[in-house]
Image (cartoon, rainbow, N blue to C red; front, side, top):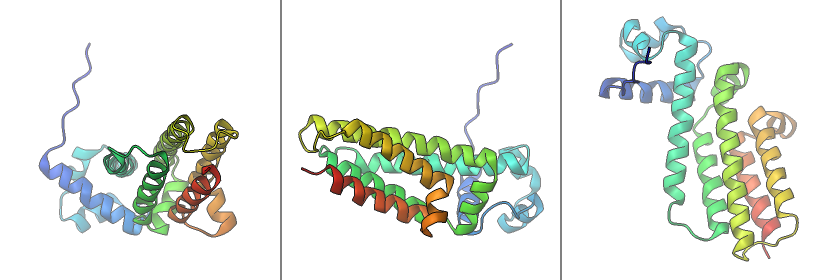
Length: 193
């Protein structure tokens, strides 16, 4: 038996996802019930169930929507940039801007809810891979020093993992957005000839 094709969300569902994203980014998501969400968004619970079969799955859908949208906008932001320094700077500035939209409540809920945290981890791995590509490109173009560039790329991945898991934030009392900004400064300063 073939699985049913995924249906594209309706205009109303896309608007509802955007409203949920804004609400979750501002206030987090763990404390809300479906009744709370339906009341805040002036819709029925069945409308929410059309998006996802449970509150937990709805949270994952909204978190995934946020990170997917952020990744798409960041890729659009860097499209056409050829200089590896500018790529890294713009890419990490974009990450920082998107994470700046997230309240401490959202970040806490994200860290404490495994399935939503996995969406953040996936996005973080993607970001680390993109930065590795930019570093390799900069070395190949002669823009960056070739001193342990691969090691630096791997260290970047570990730093991103530390940001994503909250370890760096707890140890340094900085937000994820601030940490990504600092990572950009560190990379660009350390790689430049």
